[in-house]
Image (cartoon, rainbow, N blue to C red; front, top):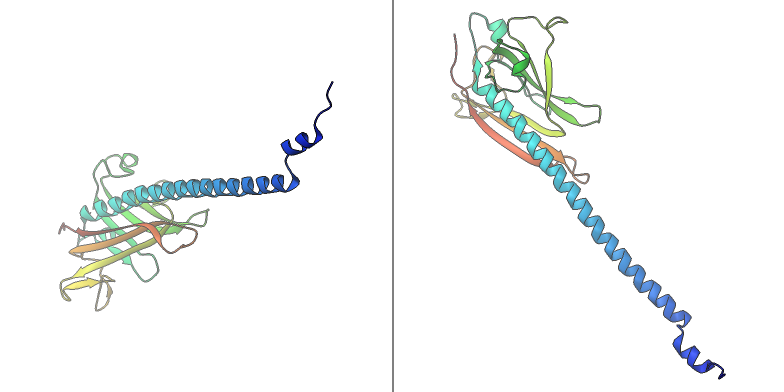
Length: 223
C-alpha cells in the first residue's frame, strides 16, 4: 500500500492565516446582517408607534371638535352652562356644556342625559406619559359618589394640546378667551382652534409623531 503523499496533504489543508481571515470576513458579514435586521425591526416599531399615535390623535381631536360643535350656553343658568378654559399652562384645559349625540364617546353610560358637562384635560399617567382625558357628567347633577364623573383617555403620550379663540374685536386668533375683567364664561367664542400632538421618539421627546389642527366654528346656541 502506498503511503499518503505528505506534500499533497499539506496542500489540501487550510493554513492558520486563511482560517483567521475566513472567520474575520464571516464576522463582518454577520455584523452587517444583524445591523440591517436591527434597522428593520426599529423601523417597524417606530412606524407602529407613529400609526398608533395618529389613530389616538384622530380620536382625541374628533371628540374635542364634536363637543365644541354641540356646545350650548344659558344665561339664566350660567352656573351650569359656564364656558371654562385655561390656557396659562403648557397644556390647555376646556370645560363646556354640550348636547351630545348618541355616537359620542361614553354616551351609553348616561342614557337620556344628552346635555352633559364635558371637560378635556391633560393628565400624567402611571407610565409617566401625558394623556388627554375627557371627563363627562350630567349637567344638572352634582358629581359625587352617587353620580361620579366618567373619565375616558382619548389620546396617550400627548405633548401638544393648545386652544386659540377667534376675537372679533381684534380680528385675530388670541390665546385666551378673556375680557377686561378676566376669563369670559358666559359667552361662546365664534371659533376655536385646537391643536393636538401625540407620540414622540426617544431622541426627540418634544417633537410629536403627528399633529392635528382643527378650526371649529361654534354655533350660537343659547337659551
